[in-house]
Length: 466
Ligand code: UDP
Image (tube, rainbow, N blue to C red; front, top):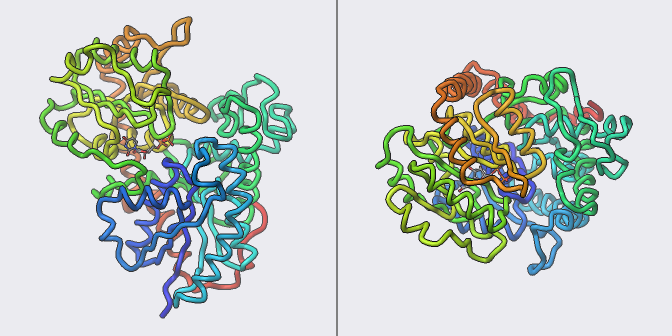
């Protein structure tokens, strides 16, 4: 008998591919066949950095379709990449589905598209295939996407998505305030990129009306006000490989797992873990100041310095820094982050507050030092510092730099006040309840998988509006 066959399509960025891979693993574990679609460039990265890809099994296959850019074109130009994706990938997806349906005894029964790949939902609808939207970002971010018409009507953004006022956004009475420049699509320095990214927002909002399932990598306990504002959004997270004691997959860089043995040698709750995700770029002055702040803290640290993290080709450490900190500092280019955060030696997480990193830190009951880089990372910082009260932010000096003294002082403040850790452990307990049997995220994910497995009825059972 034919099994359900799902296509999973993430937006081609690290913070989207990792949670989509984890969703895929959960589907496969419940006997759902999945074809995971990366862009060609990311397909090469993910498959070459996947340590255990031999263990994929028959129920999962990895395929790629082109993103429409030439091999030499800059994929960190988000505006150009987004427009190219919207221009070219829908035709390629249609061809892929037709090919699978011709060659595979398990025809495609459902498409799960990242909210940033809304066009894929339209393709599924036009081909009469069931569909769902997956949001790997916070529900607060998704709520702002779904509210974009209101933001235009209220004169906060123009019709191209560009903020036209400084007026603070209050999506509901209980939701945290959002600055217009921190809207997920508005944090880019140039208007062209904001406008291009806003096209993706429009597609995402339309896609949300074309499905009854909008599943979110979050938990009610984390963002209850945002879930109350849009009850159609269903929490199924945090979806983390570490929660099922498995390895995180979908990495664009090769992870250096030797740091786990190094962590084994450090005292419990002693290490500062510092990582800024896949996208953050530092200027040289700030990079050196961070290094000197870690040195000044006089504590063990594990620091991820990703290739390309500074504008210079290779990160330049302060003179003699590496030698001076060698007995208590470890620097890696990419860490097995979920395992690191679950390690008992880690005391706190200095993070750019990307949503995945935020989820991974809170799930492990860790206090945060927040160093947001752009866009929605600032509202994630608001949750950490003002709502969950599990962390502290940094202040910049008049030159816009977070100084070494500020870094040392915030590390000491965070680690000397037990209340940050206590609150973090309290949230960890709530999340653990939610993702385990009987909890809300667990139930929603199971219901969703049951729906995928249902014998397909008339696809017109899917709504056209929220
Ligand atoms: N990550 C990792 N190793 C590292 C740094 C990051 O595995 O050394 C993973 C991290 O666990 C998270 C993802 O990369 O799942 C980054 O996503 P996030 O949303 O935090 O930030 P983004 O990269 O989108 O800015």
